Length: 298
Ligand SMILES: NC(=O)c1ccc[n+]([C@@H]2O[C@H](COP(=O)([O-])OP(=O)(O)OC[C@H]3O[C@@H](n4cnc5c(N)ncnc54)[C@H](OP(=O)(O)O)[C@@H]3O)[C@@H](O)[C@H]2O)c1
Image 1 (cartoon, protein in one colour):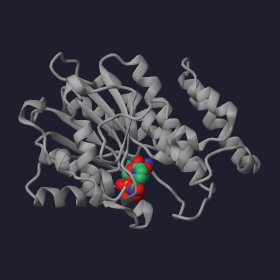
Image 2 (tube, helix red, strand yellow):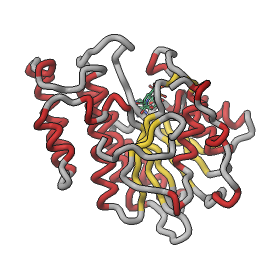
Image 3 (cartoon, rainbow, N blue to C red):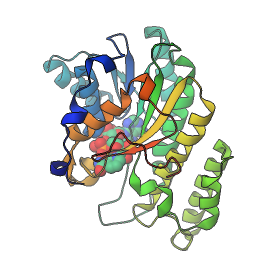
Image 4 (cartoon, rainbow, N blue to C red):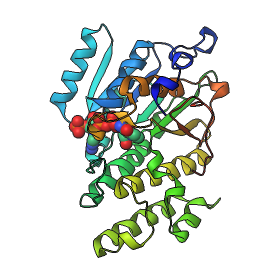
């Protein structure tokens, strides 16, 4: 989808009646020193929420915050390495000490060690640990901190990828597990473990895992499945996934059909859906019908 074909004007503003948030509404964005995360922080701050920009590297984070403050935006900063459980716990403790409740969590932080046309699984463990377990462990740590309110609905937006949709998997057993109505968290962990075992044994190529950016795709496959499982058991928090499309960031070596700012306009719009229009357990993706969820079992 070329951004020129996609009219962002419908996504760029929110009707006044839809504005359920205030400057006391608190949003946390992970991996926000650059790319889509940085653009999302900027967009949410422009919408006048209280936004916490988090990064794994303090220097890069402070620089990012400074540039947003120079634009007149009010942004808070805290270091958070999602691949490090100690960092997650420290962040949760800091949050409790500083804020009454959390309204929005955007699990954006991710790594990929693949070039656009190159598939490598050398860093599969790091990719799974960051992109899947990082989002999952942070979510678990912050779940008790979400606001419970009748007038707003707390929400989690997992930034995912179409590379990790179920149709990319050729392994029938894995498909059956992930598409089961009774899917449990342990099943997802089991799928991820099986993938890492296949990588260790050198058998991953013939086991029907996604063919493009394989380790990254499996991490997003697991994140999509986790979105569904968590949504099913969380009554007060809405949990959805969003694929921002092929976006010009360092992850793609600057290639892509649209900018991080354009992806963030849509991401912010989804993160701010009014409570009466906010689904749960759904998969959204970049494009003209971005606010129509795709099949949740994607
Ligand atoms: N670009 C695309 O075409 C595309 C398409 C579909 C989905 N996505 C998803 O969009 C999200 C943002 O990606 P992007 O394209 O903006 O990539 P990016 O520019 O490479 O940004 C990734 C961010 O994640 C951070 N990060 C990596 N590991 C981390 C960790 N352990 N803890 C905390 N932060 C960490 C990076 O920090 P450092 O600077 O310190 O490395 C960076 O700020 C990702 O979830 C990605 O999978 C992107």
